[in-house]
Image (cartoon, rainbow, N blue to C red; front, top):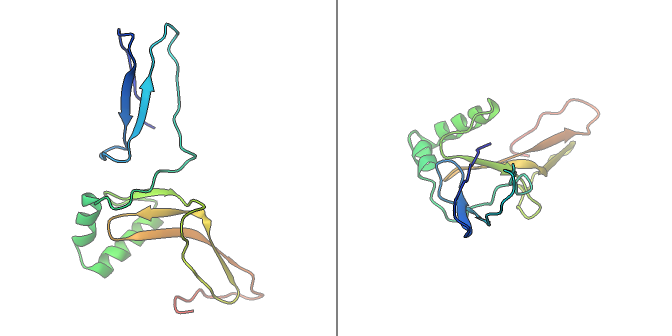
Length: 145
């Protein structure tokens, strides 16, 4: 993670705004009140999740997505995710209980997204989930099922 060091000779509170690298939103507002105590290491976390940003234009992701034809962008995005890479401007977070999951159904398969991840760009959103087979024989996942 990133590290922030703060030192002040003032006795008044100091405000910090911590943002993800290369972004101005979301911002975590932290107010520090100076005290005469030894330095401390503090870890800030929000339940392993990042805040979803609604309506924010992600220019880096938009540029990457429109640099090639739609199908090529989609194919490249899925390939990069399979290689554990994120394209420029993309964000990944854990799926939350309030997130709407894709609705998938195919006999013999069980789909689950609540324990998955959500990858967000500008135009594309990818839901990463788990597919389990409970069929007695091998089964092929069908996009049209």
